[in-house]
Image (cartoon, rainbow, N blue to C red; front, side):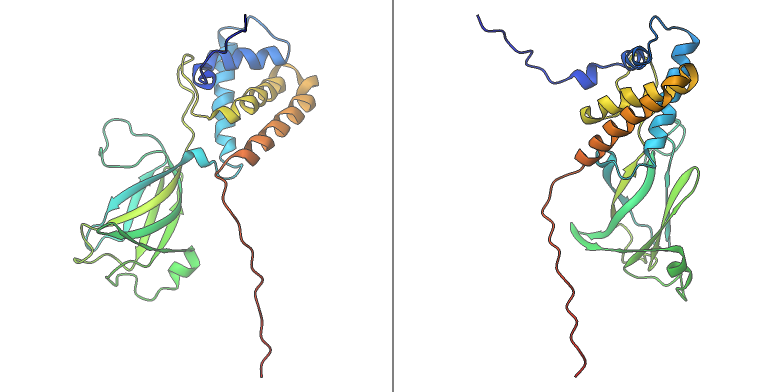
Length: 241
């Protein structure tokens, strides 16, 4: 009689925080941990998720949203932390950066050009109103702002700024929670936490755990994203006649 398969693919969502911590401790030779050791591991996991924010773009954290434009308002604010339940329900929380934006009018999108601080500073009249064509993003400690140029006027009020943004990875939270991480990153998450814990409990294993972690993380990052065709065309220069 042939054995049957499980028929499920939910290991990453059933792999709770306490099991991740247990797996990481076992990798450095520690078992039966409890109390303060669990709290230390949860804190390290949160720090590691924040460090992943410095590892490039994580495509599972890219989201899309609309902002309703207001006449004579150029600056729109999103928050880096999650809402506390007392702020406006229309606010956007957990935003880390803005990737691209378009001016949307009746479901017709016009792409906006992203400019830097120097380019925005060089604009002579920042209060000019009209259909936006450019935007400037500022990333503060507690918020991200997007400044439009031109400033929306009365004709643009009620239209939309459609944008793609990078979300922050959610905090660990309760030990029974699943992580805000796709299955491809489960191996490097466990090895990464083992590396962090080795720095505290098994210094002699730090280099070994670091090599394993970096190797698994690079494979996950290489697999992340969506496949698409890439075309590279040489730029042709014509000599002056």
